[in-house]
Length: 156
Image 1: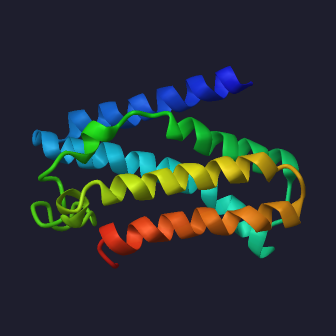
Image 2: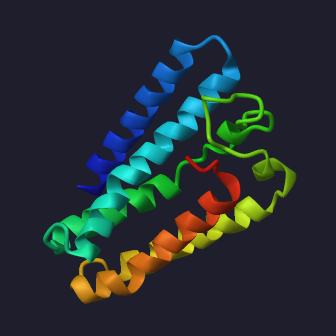
Image 3: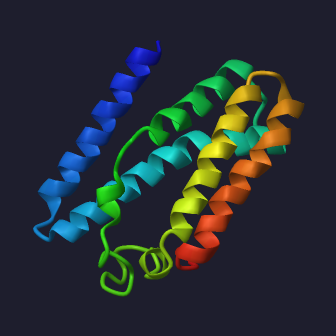
């Protein structure tokens, strides 16, 4: 099952990347679209977990484990090249919400990424162990997302 899911995610990312590269002549726009695609995939898996924790949808252990495993697979993607300097909102307004501080304060953003990875690993260890276990760790994921978005993403 993991191999099938991994293959599916790889194909999905490849499709997103191919479409991004085919859609625009500016290679920086291609990079922006690739990283936005990765963020969409993260959102697809993390939002149901947040909704379970809030009681908006029923907790389902199998589903929670699957969603966290998706997030762990996404952590394995090496798309650092999509975060090339000069691809922030200062150069591409309306195309990205990424603030130039990502690059001017580096490695601060890398530290935020490590916090996210650690939060996902902690959640993965308990996601299938009941709603209370999920609730005990999902806040760390939200905090890690917020920490990066607060400092490095334009407010909408």
